[in-house]
Image (cartoon, rainbow, N blue to C red):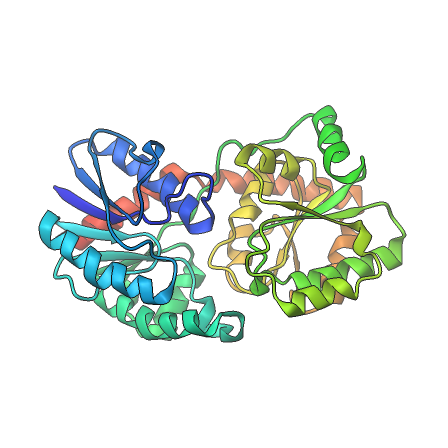
Length: 374
């Protein structure tokens, strides 16, 4: 059997969100099925670390697809030609994009449809592309795999897809995330926040991650407590917008905010494990892997009471209204209570056991096999 896979997001030292999901699940599927020939379709020369075994054949296509017009070129022309040449039994795309021109049976993985609900957060050219093509991808796919029951229902509601065509494969969490000693926590705090405790946020600095309200909420928290707690922001400013900048500029306690930039998995693990709490208050997520990362690190979590986050966190996190700065600030205040923190840490430790990349890979594989059997 031959399976072609869109692997354009497998980029060394630049794995983010969807790229990490693809990396963790594809690696496991390849190793678990040596009898299958996998053709990985890259948009640039791949790093050898992404050729997971001898049954992976890397194929480099043109152009490097990082703009909507280049997406169309890559998927409608280059991928279509490659599939015609390879003649695989199946094409799998873990980042939501398909070739509409190919006759190869296709499975697509949708992570979320945030652009359908918050179009103002997207650059206009990207929004045009998503709105035009993603409904077509949903209809084109023989099956769809997604990352939460919330996202499954959202796909059904937005694109009127038969729910029987959609499978759910929850994301996992990197096993490098675990608790650290008190001494290690102090070392991390000395490195990033001059030895002070801190709330942390991790993610792309995108409007839907709700940084503007997080900054205002942190100001409220500091005003009410006069504590030495800092706010550590982990992520690149690639999607930093004027409203986010304005919220930051208005802060009374902006000097208490530390920007760590992008961190390696090992450094992110340590920063997460040393945090007073993780504050992950996006107003829309298809899943929310940082919630699980914090659970594995014995770090309590404040997260949103909307979209998929209550599904992922269950009762193991403090849920707040992401549209209310007051609600977020109240969550921070509650996290100063050691008893509340200890209760959440214990619940988070148990909840994390329900998720693994092994399970994710197996469920995606089952979806692929169902598509061939349909």
